[in-house]
Length: 293
Image (cartoon, rainbow, N blue to C red; front, side, top):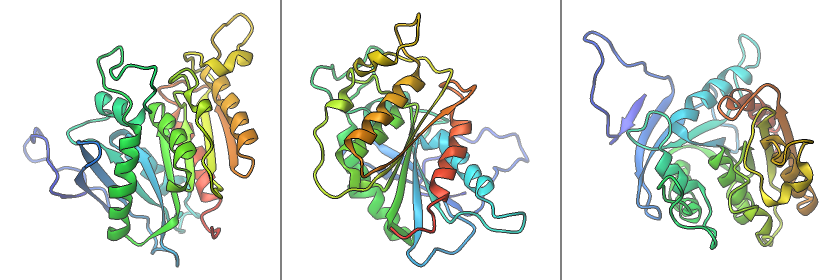
């Protein structure tokens, strides 16, 4: 893996060992003018030349943890037989420097929308409410920079997020739906702001977004205000998958022109749901990779 002006942690490898280099990948750091923090950007090129309109692009939140999974998923789940190629999606991981998996404080601020009734610091002492600033970073800096560095299709770009990242993906779909063409929200934190997403005013314009929602059937979560009819017998707080299914129905009724898909992943909880979800995500994206938009 190559690095452009990336800050590397201290080398603690045993003598004589070498780091593993991932093929066709590169990374660099990018300072967010709107957010005031630095981001680790990791990119994986597919094993095929760009299509006539350029590569479609999958942007992956929590890139430190999810970028490798997305890359392996593309290179195995979309393989066209033993001697064939894979779906020609460029993958861009959006993470944080000097982070092994998750930067809890940074993602809490970047991925959560500001709600007037909520404090700017959560119960764990983490800042929250910076989603609009993070959207501006994506729109004004990252997406244009990727377009300069690579041959990409501006009409086919997807955003994938889990938990707070899933909340951000849905918030972006409802507030800046033209920023991406496809939104994948896995186990989104729909409890945020007591159903805040349901109160957002509709965005005008002709938008035909595609949205995939999913959650593990073993997930438990806080009950958002809208899900009172989803509670299971003997349990006042519905499972995460109930809340996600409820939100999928709401999207279908309020945005009938959108393509909405919903899946429940049997046997999965909040921690391991991204394993089956990545398979669903690539099936969702790969099915339309050759369709002109």
